[in-house]
View 1: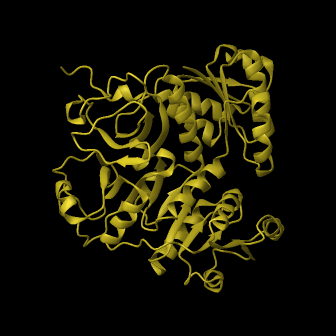
View 2 (view 1 turned 180 degrees about the vertical axis):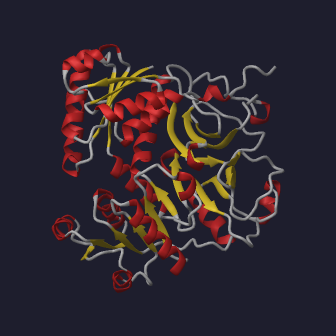
Length: 457
């Protein structure tokens, strides 16, 4: 596909890297010469210097022949204008990043008029991901499929766990919950799509698929915290904090926000009258103690400075291990070092936006067959979990799973049929109308039929 990206910032650069790696023809536009030059050297893609909202620059970048234009500059208004012009020039699809909460409600009214295929709010998407993870305290990360009926959860196996040293095939005799372990990350590099002989070790990051009730039952049987979260402290009153607090308050949670900027505190007090807003420096130990950090169930470090968020999270994790910790990171550098730190659940608005856009691009590629509905990246992007809606007459339907010739490192994690959630065995079949969750370390799948290994007999 021919894809034009306007804005060579954090999200634009990450998208260019991901999409070019998947074989798309990428052109990136930016007014600044220095980042464009670096991007061109790093990714070997076409770079156009100029204003992405002008006809001249868009024509030079080939927008009139593009399958997709993605506008991710720092300006919401500029992004919307880029998409409007691109659609008039002939771009088939357009995506805009729009971050301002004031635009959120009105966008649904003007999306069609602007020719927008997708509107992405990185902070809102990230806040929704964090809110999901707070439903199950012991999960590092939580994603949902099948309209929320199926959970994909990741947790870290503690030393002394009943699973330590046991094989995957022993799992049913150890726990009574219905689930399927689909990926395990060990250390910094090793990722497994495990077979029955796989043996668990302390420190493994284990991802599994289950219904919400079975997920809670599993964590209880593992003697891990499954109690509901009721009180939360957020440090930093930016966009993510606002979106997250709004969702948590609707769910009935008690929320305190600590923000150092007095004017922002006044704004948040007006926007979130049910939240407690504290004007203070959340990086100060005495402030956290006065705010009641000892009594809360969860803590989120959401300032705009990565170093502050890391230090606060390390402090809370060490001092109050029972508190669920959320850490927001902006920069992508030093990931190997950060992954070794005990930061709890780590989230990035950049990654949230990139995953959402990448999911849309994959769905565009699937012109036939069972199209992808949802995509999540696991274990630092080394594996993917994808949800497909099974088309009529799909070549995978009606065949027992044990007889399907799957590609290596592809696992059928779950089948959703009507109101039923099936954790599949070898005798189960996929039927038209089902939604199927596939977990794989094979990147670039765009339809369910891609899971088959056509080279094998």
